[in-house]
Length: 334
Image (tube, rainbow, N blue to C red; front, side, top):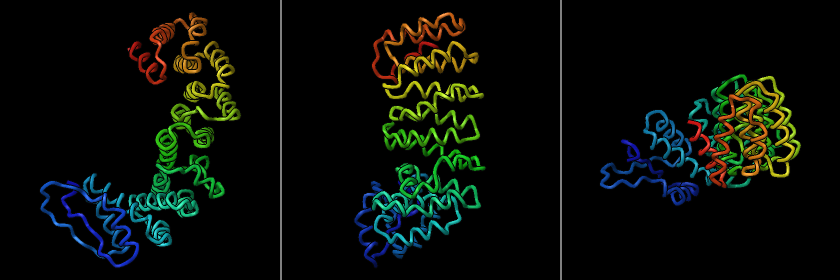
C-alpha cells in the first residue's frame, strides 16, 4: 500500500493534464483488495505542489516517492515557465529539491539545458544553506556536469565545493559520486575530471580524499593524471593516500609512469595507511604483472609485509575483475 491516504488523480481540464494522465498512469499503486477510492482534485500545478508538500511532511516513504515521481512525470508536459517560477520562489528545502528534480528531468527530456538556470542560481547564491543544498541535490541523477557546462560554466562543482555550509559540500560529493558510478558507470571523462577539480578546490582534506578515492579515473586525461600525481606530496596523509588510490585506476597508457611514482611513494612514505594505498594502486595498475614489483618492496616496511603477502595470495587466484580481487585480498587480511 502506498499510503493510508487515497491517491489523488487530477481532473481533466487542460491539454497537459490529459497528457499527464496518460504518461503517469504507471505511477498509480496497485494494491490487491484496496478499499480506499481514488480522489480527484483540480488539475492545477499549484494543487499538485500542495499535494507534494503534504506527502513530504506526513506521507510514508513510499508515498513520498510516489508524489515526487508523479511531479517528474507531469513536468515533462507542463509549461516550463510555471515550473521555473516555482523553483525560483519555493522556500521549503524538501519541496524545492523535488521541484528542482522535476525541472532537471524536464531539462534532460527536452534537451534544453537553460531550464536549470534557476536551480544553478539558487545552488550558488541562495541565502539559506539548506536551500542551496536542496538545489544541488535536485541535480543528482542527471548529467549535471554537462548541464553546468552548457550554461557557460557560470556555476560549477569546483565553485560549490567551497561553500561555507557542510550540507552543500556533502551534496556536491554525493552528486559527483552518483553521477560517475550510476549515470555514466565510470566511463565519462568530464565527470571524473570535474570531481578531481572539485576535490583539489576543497579546503577539507577528508572531502577531497573521498572524491579522489571513490570516483572512477579510467577515462581521465594526462593533465588530470599529473594533477593527481602532485597530490602524492600533499601535506595531509589522507589526501596522499586518496591520490595513490586514484592513480591505481588511471588509463593503461599512464600505468608505467604511475607505477614508478607509487613505488617511490611506498619507499619514502612513513604513514602505514598511505603505504597500503600505494600497494593497492600498484596492484590495480598491473594486476598479475604486479607480483615482481610487490616482491621488490618486501622488507622496506616490515610491518606491511603481511599486506604484500595478502596481495600475492589474492593474485595467485587468477581473478580478472578488480572488485573480486580486492574483495579476496580483504578477506585474506581479516
